[in-house]
Length: 279
Image (cartoon, rainbow, N blue to C red):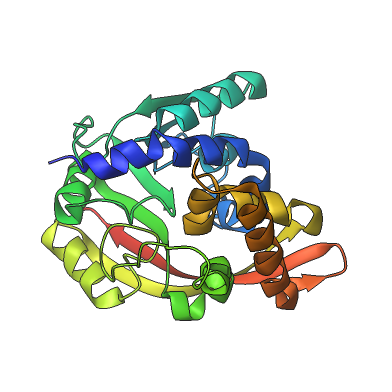
């Protein structure tokens, strides 16, 4: 069954916020896009699927790596983000075919045995039935096809990602994170991730730690805070008065001080690199 809460989230204010923050997020996660792109053999005519492609940064980067008969498809549940991804692809004028579809990868029926590579940058932690989702993807892979997905490790290893909500815990009634529930840190524990992949038919499974240094401009930090994550959602609430919003932003910006050096905000993204093969 499709998770209607995720559909509503990413086709509502959260999806719109990611569209608005596209430039900031592309800069922030550029090293992770490069990591996925670098694993694609240059000039090969591969068929690649980007799961949870968002506004298209990873799919477009990989498209630039492929041979002329290669093909990249991006899939995401968020119509606003896919709309932007399609516009970016058109503007890029890439010689390789790139298409973007609005769909739930857990439910969408991909052409069986059609994909050489399935990649994802933080797009696979939101399924309400991950075994079904990864089973769909496994059936879409060619024999020997490779899965390479990046997911967050736990919040205790990703202080930057939880700084804002910890700073305003006494100011705003934020919903508690539910361990293991669909969301940013759903794959924090590697053991269930390995079980999900085994149960969905993947083989040669590896869940390896990956630490990547990421940056954004200090001038973009306030926008990042105001748009994204639980605090961004709370700050967009129509019943939040302006004075409280200003105070919360001041508190949060002060909390990010340990990550700021000069004009740059720097943090380490503590991730899992999930790799598997279809046989």
